[in-house]
Image 1 (spheres, rainbow, N blue to C red):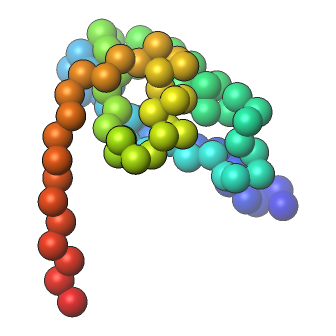
Image 2 (image 1 turned 45 degrees about the horizontal axis):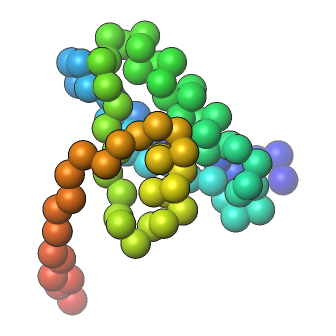
Length: 88
């Protein structure tokens, strides 16, 4: 379907840091290096907005995302635990 989004990335620049908010590739398009292409695009955009580094947060359990970032030379900087309490 021509109107379907198969891959996307969001990023904002804050002074010298570019922060990736979301990177997604639909299941049928995985394994085609779209994630790496999006990260490359984000890197170029980050440079154009004056960023010196890119940050992204992901869950350790999201092994596919972790592998993608490591494959693209991202280095794990910190680990935190965030707890949620869902209100009904």
